[in-house]
Image (cartoon, rainbow, N blue to C red; front, side):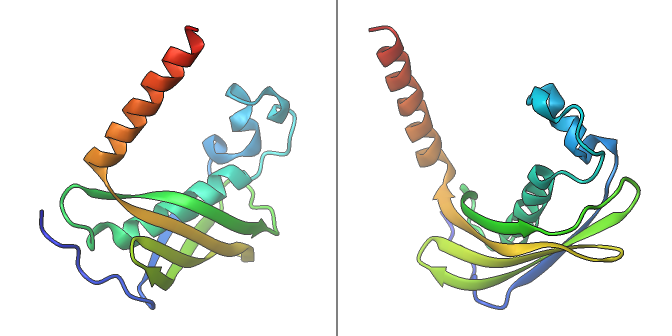
Length: 147
């Protein structure tokens, strides 16, 4: 397997997204019924996912074949609502690297200003090893359910 290229503090990436009805709080009601009557604004869950996506994209070209990243920690605030139709930008910056752990400063803005910010950590994994562990866990859980 080829080596990953240097992931260093200061590495930045931005993504832009238009908020539509699929990204609102009520859109989560198909999984979490309690959100059905909530205001139709950009959901915190989607904002966090959007920030994670930006971090993933920041690292993508720096990973060796067979590597991926998984989120391990999220610490963000969501301080302002974004209505359908506005664009949001996720701005991410690597602030620390410790072996396979990468820590980001994350900021999300809409066209009127800051909507969320905080920190996110991702771990660099070997995809095959990770999936083997997931498979083992699933097998163990199945065995436990059958006893």
